[in-house]
Length: 381
Image 1 (cartoon, rainbow, N blue to C red):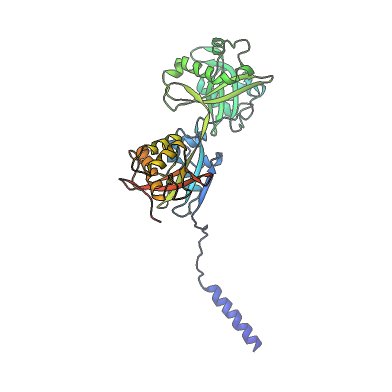
Image 2: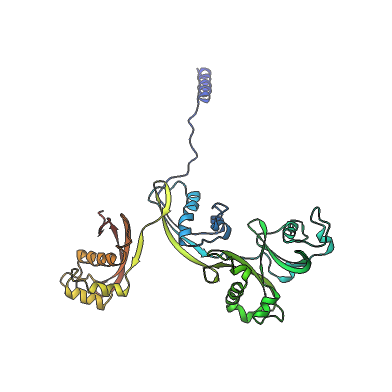
């Protein structure tokens, strides 16, 4: 009987092995998430390669961020539930360029006669603007570039005639490109011609100088459009000789540098990430004064008190300055109506933060309202 049992067991195992097993998808858990994230370089890398954000690790504006960030969230959090939220901090403005090596002695190079012949098919000891770009992948110091590698090259430049010129190049987004290099004449125009460089004493004024130089350069100013980015390379000496690069954006009047952090909220709706329409607002001192002028909210004593002391007394209903829940709601709705009714959207949420006073202690409290298309209301729980 033991042998028979063993054989039947093997038969059962064999039969089971022959059955088609159900396929269990390799799915990550689905859940409602509340995310807080500051975008890093790898996050911007999730964007389409043609976008401003991908190229610059910053967005042109808040609107650019609203349109672009959902693609990042979709790539990184594709299976969270509707109702999930994300508070995303990102940069608006120009990219911050960290040059791979900024020592002038490491990035400056003068081509030799032999260097010109490294470009396949070239027989001359001079280059046009297009030829020097084609040569960079063959150059002795530029054939295996690092990200954000800088090269300041002096060579025989041919543009109808031959002259010795110095141009700047940056290996950016996996390609060499010519960038704007300050010239000796420009250093002269701002009184920095002794060594054609900025010094430590100029540190806080460099952007001002460069803005003026770019505006004075007709080859730049004649075609500048809002949002244009220009990478500018300049020499800087603070005991060590550096060649730096800063990105400048044209705002319509000036060339400005730097990125400003912004934070926006996003939510998952119908399977897609979208910029949240929720408005978060904290009452300012002027709002409490405004409430004091509204004759239809609270008592006269309560209104006078809140205008004098920017908080709502909720200590006891017997107090002359007491704010009941209904009166408090009416006061906050009065502020929302004054500030947001002209621009509010149907079903848009408004989270209002205000200060309360309770038996000697003040604290901040938040309350949510919804605009129904006509009025601000307290949502039903």
